[in-house]
Length: 166
Image 1: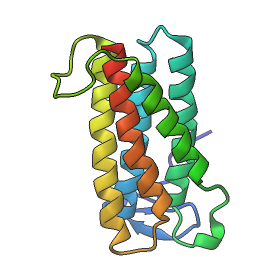
Image 2: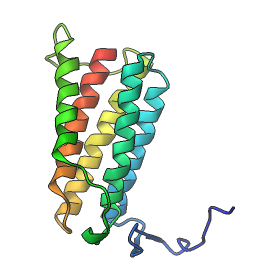
Image 3: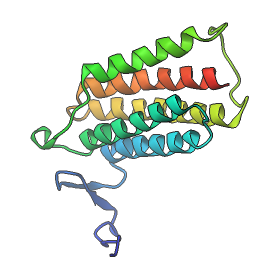
């Protein structure tokens, strides 16, 4: 099976609903940054020994597919799965759990105390960039506000996990 279609050779790509856009379109940049985030989370996961945190990272990676598919679809009627308020509440529970386990959770830190924590901090910064890209998209097109809220909370979740593992 060939994975190349040659349809993007002139700088365009297909969205999930079949619409074609430029590869540098803010919509593509938005879901592409979510893809990058999921990849960094996968990299971090390989250094985590704690099975609960590994499972949590994998759960979030799967949720990122839902988020990306929403961003990669212009026609709202074609969106099959959605981020819901319970997804955000779930992240808030994780943030509270791991921040409460820290001795002194306030203040700035220099990332890099160990590999797993460092990669989660990289994921956190990619998540913040994804949030900025999605906000830019929301100025031009309809974006479910829960997507922005989820990504905002996810960056806090990644910070809490990185701090806990650091």
